[in-house]
Every structure is written in C-alpha cells, then in structure tokens.
Length: 149
Image (cartoon, rainbow, N blue to C red):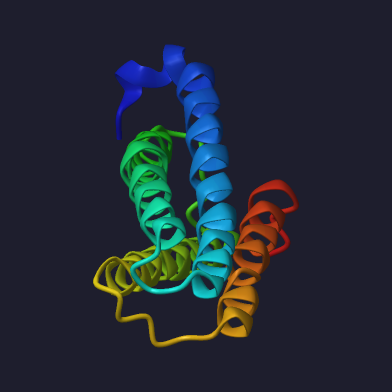
C-alpha cells in the first residue's frame, strides 16, 4: 500500500479520469476512421491520409492515454481505503478493463492491416466493433459509481 501518496489522491484520481476520457475518445474514434478507410480505394491519396490519421491517433493520443490511465489507476488501487477489496464490483471492473485492453490490441491489429493494405473486414464490421468500447465503458462506470456488488 502506498500511504505516502494519500495527500495527492484527488490529483491522481483527476489525472486518472482525464486519461480514461482521452483513451475512450480514441477508442470511439479509431473504428469510425476504419469505417471511412474501408470506403477509400487502396493506394489512393485518401487511403494514405487515413493511415496518417490513424497512426497519429494511436501514437499521440490512445496509447499514451491508456498507459497513463493504467499508471494512475494502479496508484489509486494501491492507496489504502480507495477500494473495498471484499466487494466484488472491482473484479467486474477489472475484467471490463482487461476486455477494453484486448479491444485496444485488436484496434492496433486492424490498423496494421490497413497500413499494409490488407484489411479483411467490412464497414459494417467496424460499425459493430465501434459499439464494444461503449458497452465496456458503461459496465466500468456503473461498477465504480454504483458499486452494485
């Protein structure tokens, strides 16, 4: 347990929330770019523009935000009194976070496929996949705010 960080708990919590918002914003936007990228002809100027946009979104926003969300979240979890470890809500939240992280990995895989002009999925597939982070976000927020278990 990290007792020495307790005076900074609200700052750490604020930076955690900011990081999560940035991560989620990117998770919502990247699959939408994939939908539009599907509509662009392979090798076209438009397709190349999407590759740049997707790379910048991943490297400048989504990846750093995810890393910071994990760092601040772990710091919070290690502070005494922040989590009732006897409750079950945090287990559900953790599973949802792991699924969101796996989804992030899938987005990176899809981006690499687009980057190499080897996309294997349709616009509708990415439209459907765009709903995954929304569902996971709802579960996470309910677990943290309501703590139903």
